[in-house]
Amino acid sequence: MMKKILLMCCFLVGITAVSRAQGGGQRLSPADQAKQMQTQLKLTDDQTAKITAILQTQATKMDSVRTAANGDRDAMRAGMTPFRTAASAQIKAILTPDQAAAYQKMQDERRARMQNGGGGGGGN
Image (cartoon, rainbow, N blue to C red; front, top):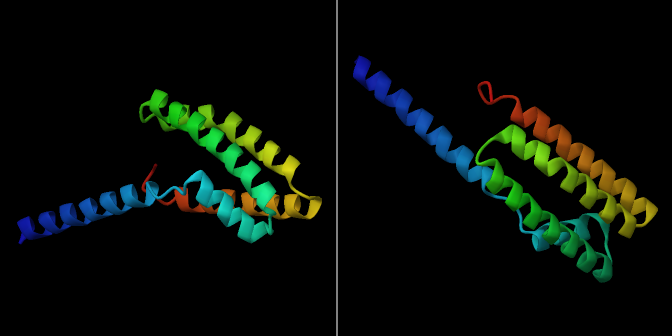
């Protein structure tokens, strides 16, 4: 009986770990992110092309930070923040005032979701 319970617990922990790993790996490509923004913010094709380039540059820089941090989440967060801030400022410069306000709202909502979702993971 005890072995079954232990085995079941290990099975559940394994499933949770796999689902988290899969969920964490589903980042959108820069082009897909730009297309999503084009729909949500009603961007022109020119704006979308410029934002795609900005997001591509940001992704390249963030990948190098991710590699250098070697799994250290605090180091990754610290290294990525300046790139996110710079990319956000560059994107806002391309947008109209209405689009920039909607973009800021999207960023705020995303940040709130990440804080709420990131805090329930057993002490992570």
